[in-house]
Image (cartoon, one colour):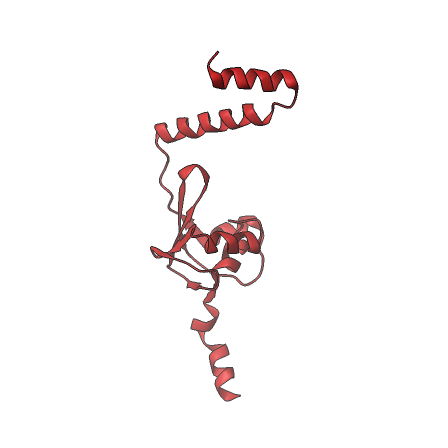
Length: 138
C-alpha cells in the first residue's frame, strides 16, 4: 500500500495521459472512439513513431496527425489534462507547428471539394444524366 501512495504522488505519473484521451480533450477529434480509430488505422504518430491509443504522452512530445486531402498536422504538447476543458482552454495544451499549405495544395483541395459537392448534390434524373454525359465527354 505504501508503494501505491508514493507512485500516485509523483509528478511523472500525473504528467502523462493516454494519447486517445488527450486527443479528445484537446478537441482534435470529436470523440475518444474517433481518436482511437485514427490511432489504430495509423494516422497518428508520436515522435515519428506510429502510436497506439493507449500510449502515454507527456510534455514536449511531438504529435503528427494525417488529415484528409493529404494534410499533415504537427503539434507539440505543452501540457496534459485528464478532464474535458473548454475549447479555448484546450488549445493552450498544444502548439500547432503545421506549415502553411502551398498555393498548389490549396487549389487542389478547392477543386476536389468542388468536384465532390457537384456529384453529391445531384438527386434527380436530369442531374444524373448530365453527370453521365459530363463523364463520358459528350
